[in-house]
Length: 65
Image 1 (cartoon, one colour):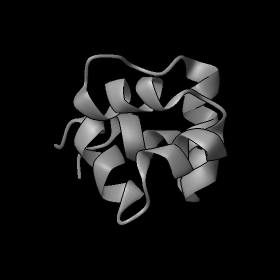
Image 2: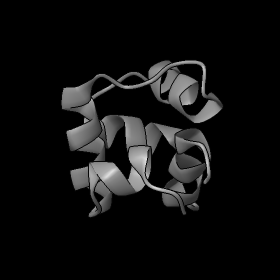
Image 3: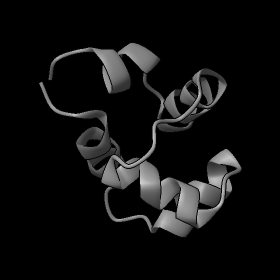
């Protein structure tokens, strides 16, 4: 099972942190904390992130990969 922060980095791919942060409506520093594992998104934002990447909350935050 990969930690969610690693999955988020993989999903971001070649896009910048700013592109993702702007797309989901958070500050770049907030997105950077999610990717570093220093912060976990609140539940409402988990849904936004999953929708942005076209996947499910479970696939990002709760399932083994």
